[in-house]
Length: 101
Image (cartoon, rainbow, N blue to C red; front, side, top):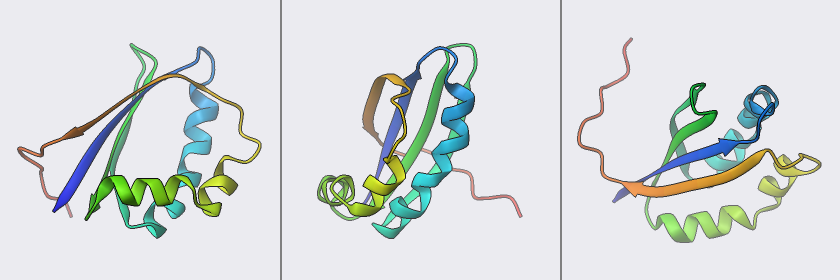
């Protein structure tokens, strides 16, 4: 069963550009551990970075393995904290438009 997690980050003032520049570095490790990133958006009005990630299987177990992985550690090495607060929730997909070709 595919699980989708919605992730909203309250980014520290003045840090959004640096965060957005760095963020793609986590995509290869996420994918290596069976995750698929569905989208990522910046909400400039609230200074939030919003994205969704899915996994087909035991999401919590896969997340634990990913969080402890050397690949994730390498992606975060030397990166200063730019997130003031995180809001994480598992969501149910009601509608998802197929990619436009």
